[in-house]
Image (cartoon, rainbow, N blue to C red; front, side, top):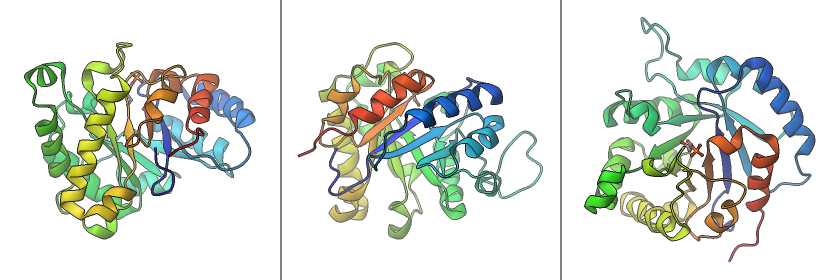
Amino acid sequence: MNRKYRKTVIAGNWKMNKTPTETKEFMTAFKAMLPKGRWCDIALCVPAVCIPAAVRAMRETRVGIGAENCNANASGAYTGEIATNMLVDAGCKYVIIGHSERRAMGETDADVNAKVLAALEAGLIPILCCGESLEQRELGITEEFITMQIKCALAGVDEARIRKVVIAYEPIWAFGTGRTATPEQAEDVCESIRSVIRKLYGSKIARATSILYGGSMNEKNAYDLLAQPDIDGGLIGGASLVPEKFLQIVEAANQPTA
Ligand code: 13P
């Protein structure tokens, strides 16, 4: 982390977990535990039907609620889809875009790019995900693959808008598996993502971009991961479902930085 130049963001991705009733229970418990004072930005990205309960519970706190996906079109015949202006109207601040689980369902780099542009247009903060598979890592093409994902996702995003984008590096082989990337492995890739941003937008913007790590991040390994200079927070799956665990990760983000 480097709190001098950029925001630290601890974001939960609930995936397909919790009902609206369970959301209310989580939020009530988590709200009661929230430390006073301002530490880092906290986001909870929840299933679409849980957004109203989450927004209601977290009103007047510094926890921002987010969605896990959006559609790039403004409106129309897209049964089952949710447009970015609907998310804004429902009280969302964030939206996860390009998660590997959605890419595995057929989302392309072009779709991801269109969603990033739509989210920015609507005023949402996109949490843009990238990450290599085990096969790609073993082939030694991690950096090339991620550079391509980032360049595709950010096509047409201008200098004014890139400042709103949060990037999350999530190696596919490291989630749900308990197999975390080592802090050094995660740092290497986050550093190379920052250098892609530097080439695209210059060093000032690169220095100000928050890059998160995701993949089996939990209350035990968060401190070491967040101690890395280019890891500015986390995108947390399983451990964001338990208020005590999620809080401990928020606390790990409060460590002193260089
Ligand atoms: P886990 O933290 O459960 O490994 O999930 C990571 C993830 O995919 C967050 O988006």
